Length: 155
Image (cartoon, rainbow, N blue to C red):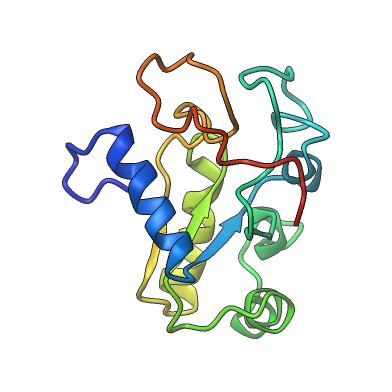
């Protein structure tokens, strides 16, 4: 979510907070266990990097792999509309931020929503976990997300 390429973490935090306040949609593309806080990283990786797991309040859990077939190809547009629109209530007119741990999974969802479904207002958070969206650590030293934006699956 760095349109100018030079914004700092504080600017991104403010953008996310403004997005939330304006009713923008958040899509957490991580695994259900990461979303709930049971795990802090993808299941096959060491559980590292954050002191507390969870998700941004109000985010919808839509793991990125739901958009893929078992062979790795994308699901049909109709199947994708079912996942994102019928099941999650998203609309093409929504302002959407997709996020994960470091951006590789959310970029998949960004592609799906932007290019396969035609949503014009989709962004991602770059290195969300590295910026400590997940709470209270200072591993990034200047993180604007040290303010515990994530909650332990309260909503």
